[in-house]
Image 1 (cartoon, one colour):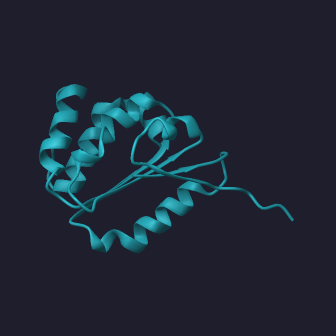
Image 2 (cartoon, one colour; image 1 turned 120 degrees about the horizontal axis):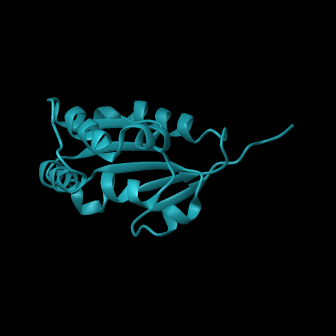
Length: 137
């Protein structure tokens, strides 16, 4: 897992998206989930779990509950080498529901998380954390 944190407008999403475009061809399945803070408050975490599963498995997946979604992600993606970008995470619950542990995904998988909250990333084992900074002239 890789965490990118910094202020709003600091280029986190741009950096994560560029990395996604550059390396996505190296993975069995890929998914870029943008605006998690906004999308989870509007539509809930179940919808985001469905998106990850549907895009990664290239089929429509319906999740009946958030708990079921966690199990489905772990069961159905644990043998796949996946690239998942989780953009604008602002709550630990979002991280737990969408990428609970590195063992949810197959060997060689990469999970990229962007956030404004460094402490959110610090709570995760096996996460390399990078800070973006804005250069002023």
